Length: 455
Image 1 (cartoon, rainbow, N blue to C red):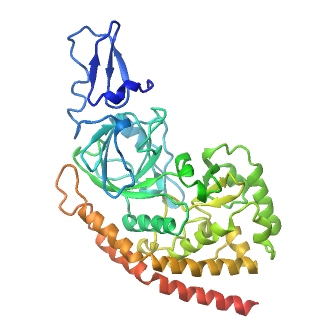
Image 2: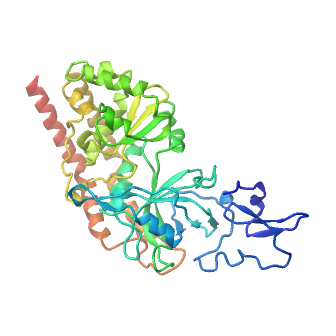
Image 3: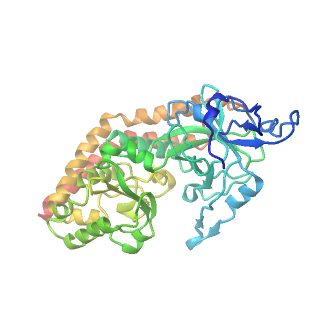
């Protein structure tokens, strides 16, 4: 794709400028082409948006887009039939008939229309698109709703969604309209770096009814933009950011990690962390000797938040969804998953009564180190107090109100974004947040009593 032209800031609709040489046709989607047709010839882009739900009113680089603001945006994805077919191709059955998905590359939208709450519309043109596997394990068909990952600058270098390079559009199953949005909000309220979320309407050409709009959860991606915005919580910023499944001390698992930020080829620092963890495991100086390489203060708070919210499909409990950041200060930190995370997950049938300590080396090693264990329990007591002070029930009520009050830019949705399964999800999560502080305090007392007996 050609480089965006500066004159686009003046173009609200496609315009043809007459020049001595070929005419330059500026398009709303931040591209331009040379038009060498004779004057008076029919503009091939005149009906570019005739079959789409809306037409642009402003250029993408001028759109005042607040992706995670208090009001709902609309995303409409125009992907060719061959593109949709390619997106759906890699679905296979893996172990235990679990659906696995290998996201294809080089699939782009033909148009990405974004409508703001004020009614302004921009076309981001060709944007990288893939499906996110674990969120729904669903392809994009006339009867199924997948989850999408969008990359703003895969085709247009430097293009951003309101300052963001990538976003996820999650179809929000298993009550995650409440569970995911509230969980990540609690992490952030506790001063922990975590992805932001918002609700949005999503439509697209992959569904037979082009006017259909589906409520989705927009999720922030962990990338360079996130690292810059959360630099104060990440040791000054991200030297590297890796995502993988497995133990941190497992060299093979780490070597197969996806490198989201930085140059992960230099494994000097992570090797030093692995060496320190192995050398000091099952000692009374586990946290002290590994402190130069690892931020224990943040780990204690994050571990408490996972335990408090019953989030167990994580590093500590499952060696899964590992997000490992190497800060500019040389120390490593773990982030909550931006995708596979739901508070009070008993709504989905599993992960209820999540334990505080588990088998992962950081958790197990801390549990066997008296000073580290004490610090973990003390931190959890403080986290429970902060959690209770933030009135988590009002958080769920606020999310419910936003869903019910949502207004779509077209079509009839009298219930807003509220779906039938949201009735049970709302009641479950409201009850969970209403009683969780008290039950967590009881668990903490039991853990302290066990510690006293074992001394």
